Every structure is written in structure tokens, then in C-alpha cells.
Amino acid sequence: MKNIGIMGGTFNPIHYGHLLLAEAAYEQFKLDTVYIMPNKNPQYRMISSNISVADRVAMIGLAICENPHFTLSTEEIDREGATYTVDTLKNLTMKMPDSNFYFIMGADSLFHFESWYKADEIVKMCTILAASRASHVSADIESQIDYLAAKYNADIKLLNTPNLDISSHSLRKRIRGGNSVRYLLPDSVEQYIKKHHLYEE
Ligand code: ATP
Ligand code: MG
Image 1: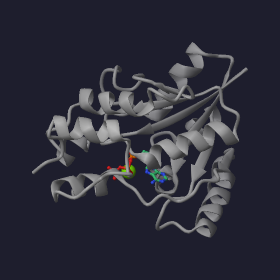
Image 2 (image 1 turned 180 degrees about the vertical axis):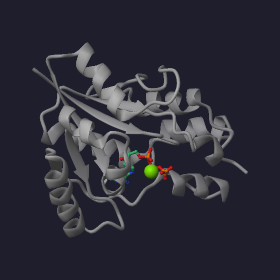
Image 3 (image 1 turned 120 degrees about the horizontal axis):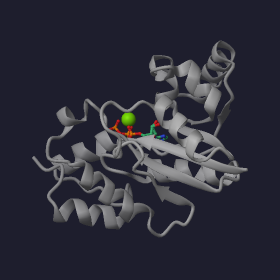
Image 4 (image 1 turned 120 degrees about the vertical axis):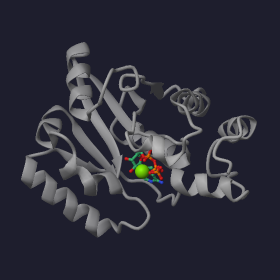
């Protein structure tokens, strides 16, 4: 049996909050690898028109290349049409029947989970690993875990991570405003952003 973590996100851009979460999941749940899986966020075109999927993927590549615990997965961006987590999990289960899947998310995603397409089917195919995130206090997260676990008969576990108050949104805003993003994301990603003039006004 393999234990595979899946960390989905827009990664626009990838930052230390994402990487810390993935590493914590790897370590605390003895995973064999964590798939870093960029999605095709439908709202994404509106967020910043100068960012291509290729740029997001390139930044992920730079961010994870030195960590053997992580694997870039293009599962969702390679698929035609709308991509739902439920289909991703079905595909992976078919491709790797001898695997346990762990879907990794921050607290904000956990609070939106009920609105996910076929949430009831998602929980049958994976364990959810949830982490705290600034603005969500851990008591709230624990009660949300209990609530969802009861509602869906889901296996949801809390990840233990330091709380890094970093979001891609705040990074985009900082870059637009000409502010430093050093120490918030890997240097290689910062260099890429500068070189390609991403997120600038
Ligand atoms: P944006 O600000 O554009 O929404 P983001 O920083 O939230 O970007 P996403 O790609 O939307 O990044 O997030 C992917 C996953 O990573 C989500 O499950 C989110 O909850 C989680 N995540 C992102 N940043 C953090 C963080 N600092 N701490 C904990 N979880 C995080
Ligand atoms: Mg987000």
C-alpha cells in the first residue's frame, strides 16, 4: 500500500504556506509522496490575466525541485473541460488501486468543503488532512472537522503546523505595490516572477 498526499491549489504563486503544509503532511502521516497538483481555477482568469498555466507550473517546479518528498502532478491541468476533485480521485484510484489517498487542505478550504462538487463521494476515496490558517482559530477548525466527519462519515484529521499568514493574494498585492516578497516564497520563485514581470501592474 502506498500513501499518497494530494495538495491541490491554484498556486498563483506557490509560497511557503503551501510548502510547509505539504511537508507537514508528508512527515506526520508517513506519506510516500505528496502530489502538488495545480488546478484550473475557473475564476482564475479574472484574478490575473498575465499568468499562464505554464508560469504556475514552472514556479511549482522551481519550488519543489530540491525536495524529494514532492511530485508535481499535472493530472488536473492536462484534463479537458471542468475538473472536479471527485474525478481526480476516481482517476487516481483507477491508476493506483494499491494506494491510500490523503487530500491536504488549509482551514479556509475545509470551511467551504460542503460546497465542493460531490463532497459525499470525495470523502469515500480519501482521508482529509486539514491545517489551521490565519484567521481561523483552532477550536473552530476542530468543531468543523467534527461536523463534517459526522455529516459525511468522513475521515478528517488535523495537521499540526505553525501558522504562516501567507496567501498568494497577499503576495500578488505586495508585488503590484512594489513591496518585497522575500522570505515568503522560495528565492527561485521570486527570481522567476521578477524575470517574467509577473503580477506587476
Ligand atoms: P489565494 O490567495 O489566491 O486564494 P492561497 O494562498 O489561498 O491563494 P491556494 O492555491 O488557493 O493558495 O491554496 C491551495 C491550498 O493551500 C488551500 O487548501 C489553502 O487552504 C492552502 N493554503 C494556502 N496557504 C496556506 C497557509 N498559509 N496556511 C495554510 N494553508 C494554506
Ligand atoms: Mg486560496
